[in-house]
Image: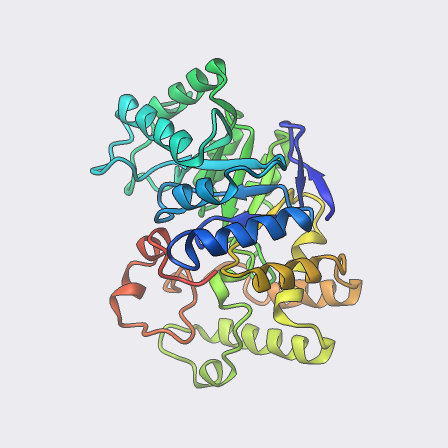
Length: 340
């Protein structure tokens, strides 16, 4: 497995890492997570990203990796614990980190990220933006000085506010999701460019679009459900046509597109089974996409350079658009109701 430098941390991280949402009771629990982690290490993967918001992932991961001799880069987050969650309570945030250490069975966290720092109406993390300040930032500095945290980061889903936070130059790593893949490019000239300028490690989440990029929905796209903009419909049809003409699977196309970008340090994959893991590794081992496929993907992405205002954050192909899970996509992701 190829490794890349994780920005100014100077850690060598595998180009694929494990996304922790389904290394939990939401999928196969401890037994399958242990199988996934053992196989991942055999395949050269050396990192896992988890969070208190990912159900019981921290506990499950901690149980699964106990006794494993291979070095692993462990990322977890601040956010959502304890409930009711108050991001202005530094003592509660400190207790959350201590709980993460206990659950993971570690004496330190390699990378501690602020989870969803770019949605102030959800969590008011900051007391000041210029200069950036808040209890989370104060705690991170304290924990780094004490050796409990090696590096710090941000994990968010927007581009404008995330770019501003990245430009504060107070963090070592950024995880950006839902905004850079074969069709979405909003993060490339915003979050990713700012992170690159500050030599931050760049972690790219939701490469598969929470599944909508890898599960074909030809008939549904053709029927144009009420939420689907005409420009997005035309783009999806063009994407499916490219898959057919290239002979590449959607999984391979999505993963090889991302590794074609040298700015991306690692891609967390939310595998539920060892088979999911092995399929992802096999795709990545084929290397970057051919130039003609990359060029065509650029053309298809340019058909809709920014997302329509009304479009759901996760395109709900195959789902009940009028159900409660679609009404609150962000919460659904946090409690693990959606496929990666």
